[in-house]
Length: 219
Image (cartoon, rainbow, N blue to C red; front, side, top):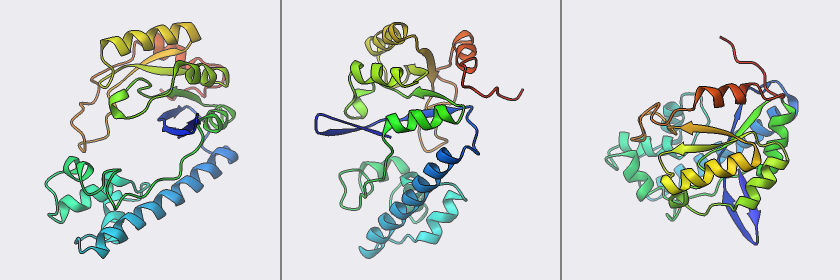
């Protein structure tokens, strides 16, 4: 996702839960993004191959195993081929956003995404809104505007939020009547973050799944 504000674009991570996957408008947008991500992944691989790095597009597709191809899969291919020792090393160098092999990804405006997920019966949570060490963050005014068009919650307890950020996020959630969630931001063994390291309070979880637009989870 992205949001353009005062001439700059800030990348945002928006989580969508409990939506109807068959909802046509959202399904079409996801298919479009998936195709553009695949083209982007293929272009990064082509650029690396052209400079002699021993990886290939079929190799990256095999690693992705049918999932949407992203930079972590390219990183894993570079590890598999012995170019780097770890995915972290690949992200720090060859496939970093400052690398000559980097290709920007197509993103969806966050306000459009909020409307699409809501229309598909889902609930939305803004991930690590105050994680400034990851890059530029949006102001409280943007989060308030997101809440006005249907944002349901924000991650408060997150590894990239220090104590001050957690306090600020919790206060903001209270002011905007947003659900406060935790998040380990677990992405498999590519990262060092442990599954379940920042959990969500059960009452907050109940608030999230009881939102009027949410499909009830099974079980």
